[in-house]
Length: 313
Image (tube, rainbow, N blue to C red; front, side, top):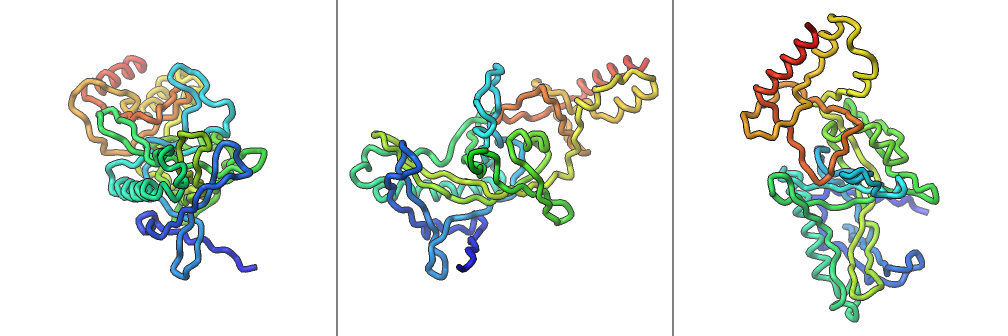
């Protein structure tokens, strides 16, 4: 048997005109959906699963679904139900590149609806949007696409491979659950790329209904940002910091407290000239739909310094 070598292209090099989508048929794997596959025609005339690499993206928004809502209510019964990734497409060059290609795929699925769902169901089916939309704090739209981590068997553990790149060497790290990932990485601390496949085409059996596609993440490459240094406040304040004046000055002075303050007033914004501090605070639950810019004014920095001096004296 010959070894199967998948063709993996950068998303900008994917030619969706070569993607063939079969009509959805009843499947033994689902009582509620009919299914089919989408395959790319390769240069040699063979058809293979569509694999692509996402652009390098800063992890500043999106990511894993939150475990709880803003009121502290549990959103998922099991940890594996959160094995999903919301990939935001911002106004950066890479974000625009990804959005353009996902829009191209979405347009194709709309155009070929009859061949995907069957002519008998065409008028009763609607595409489940490939591209989601929410709103940032500034009121501008934010677009995203949902990807699923690969999970295996009855354990439902994550089977997606994770690599951390350091000095141009990719080292695999063990991540089996969503909690594993959250314990190792924080928003704002790294950039990432993913290898993703279009693994399923579906239509709901109930009419009127939806049809669409789903994606599976096979690998994630993580590159830690050089301009970010993490401060773990849980460890910093685990022991008394009042043992001596010298220690207070040394330990507190080593932490840029101004980065922990968010100012909602419209005042002069100070552009950072040193490393960004990504604070780890386990009591803070971040909303994946919100962008939380940090503003620091000269006035508040003065108050922080004065408060620290009072502690020392």
